[in-house]
Every structure is written in structure tokens, then in C-alpha cells.
Length: 387
Image (cartoon, rainbow, N blue to C red; front, side, top):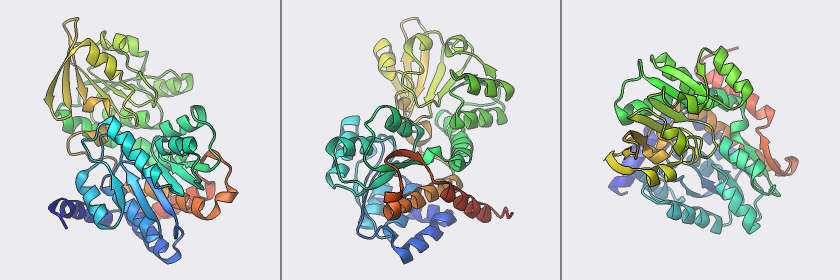
């Protein structure tokens, strides 16, 4: 085993020891082998917690062919998983064209089942007409893409982020915690007293706002949905448009799933030195193309760029507009416990596809209720919260 693979194996071993739900399901899968004879194609952040997920699928009989998402692949984890016989494509420093090529190579293997993150694999499978029996989609962004932008696939796709269990456990509490922790780690800036603008008050935006305020940040919310804006106001946050908040905030964090939420006209109204970060899956919520074209960019350090604007002000862009908690220095992502929960949703949803796909309707759909409740019971037992 190479030094790189050994380092990855040591990290995966530690993570595995703290994910009891996946440990148990791995043992169950080893007995019932629900994926025997199946090839699972994956496009998902390749980091230690994902490695534990893939090990469980492999124990269940799956052949794994996978790539990471752009900018979040951890090379030591990839090396470790290759030693276990998995076919993995991609490196941390791949550009967008190389990432697209990696996705295409996964599809070239003609997987039976998809484990997707952002609907890239689903889009390719639909375009190619591949004989996929079904799959899962991790993100809200990918679920929206499946429902609004792509032809309805002939196979079922269970959208994990439709799960209320995941929304509470992972999106609100884990994303909220990890984004705030990543902001502090990447910038070394203080949260107390700092003025934060959170764009979007879905589950992730709720969590980010909650954890910023818990650490003493002054938080405002920009939300175009009237009901969510109403909720944010009742939760005690200042609520306004991004245009009106541009001159108030010190730091702006997007969590909407939509493109160009922070546009160049909004950026030009910000105070000198304002910090921009994105917590959404796709690196499009900040219009970085327009920002780079308008200003002069200097790389300060890994994950931090200064962009000097023609109006004499400058802004600071974190991780190139990519997902802050997985693209920054020493990326950690969401907490182990939350990913244990989220990936149990993944594994059991994939098992449902592998064994009972004919019972599921074609197209995007939520996690079946019986799986949600079974996983909630398992999580409560793991937490010692008996009922």
C-alpha cells in the first residue's frame, strides 16, 4: 500500500469507528447481499465518510464505479478505496472539464444503479438511454434539476434531501455547524459581533443562521419565498432583500441552490472587504464569472482570494465560490453522526431500488415513509434516546 493510501486508510478507520449505523448496515448487507451482480455508479464527494458508505455497498455485493464532485475529492481516500478494488476516477485538482470527463467515465461503465449528487449522472444516463433500474439523488439542487430541467427518467430516483429526517439532522444541524466551523477555519475571522447575511432560509440556511447567532454573530436573512421569510422574521432575524442588505453585511453566505443569487450589482454595493462564501452544492450561487471579469484577483492563500473592484472597494471570495465546508483548507464536511444518518438513508434507499424498483414510480420521489421511520428508530437507539 502506498503512503497516500495508508494515510487515507488511517483516516477512514477512525471515521468508520464513529459511524455505528453504517457499521451495522454493512454487517446486514454482508449477510443478505442485496446488490449482488449490480454495478453502482456514483458521483458524490469522495472523502472519508463517503468511503464508509461505499464499503457498506461493496459488502452488499455491489461493484463500485465512482467519481467525486468538483473540488472536493480527497486523494488519499481515493487511493485507499482503489486498494479495496473499487474503480474511482478524479483528483482534487481536476478542473471542470476533467470532472465532466470523470462523470462520463462512470457512465461508460453502464451502471445499473446511480448514487448521484447534483443529477449529473442522471442527466447523462437519460441522454444516453442507459438501462438503469433506479437510483438516489443526494441534494435539493439535484432534485430540483430532475423535476424542472431534465426529461422524466424511465427509472425511479429517490431524492434523499426530500427526507425530513435528513433535513433536520444533516441539513439544519450538520450543515449549519460545519459551514460556520469552515468559515472560522478558512478565514481565522471572529464570529461574535460580525454582521452576516444568509441568502436562503431553507433547512441549510436555517442551520447556518442558527449556529452563527449561537456564536454571537449578528444575522440577517435574504429570502424571496414569503413563507420562509415570514418564518425567519418570527425566528428573530432581520429580513430584507440582498440589495438592501449589501451595505450592512460583513459576510455573505449563500444557501439557496439557485444560480447568480449574489450578482455583480449586489457585490458592487457591498462594504469594502466584504467576505463572500457559498454553502450550496453547485458553485454558481455567487456570480464568480462576472466578479472575476470585473475586478483584479489576487490569491491570498489557499481558499481565499481578494478581488479589487473598479469602484475602489474589494471583496474576499472563499474557496472560489465552491461549497465552503468541503472545498476549503483541511475540509471536514458535515459531522460524523449526521453523515451516519444521511448515508443510512442512502444505503437503505439504494437497497429498495435494487430489490423493489418495480414498486416505485419513474422519476424523482421522496424517501419511502417506512424507511424514514426505521432509520429514525435506529438513530434514536444510537443516541440513547429511547422512547
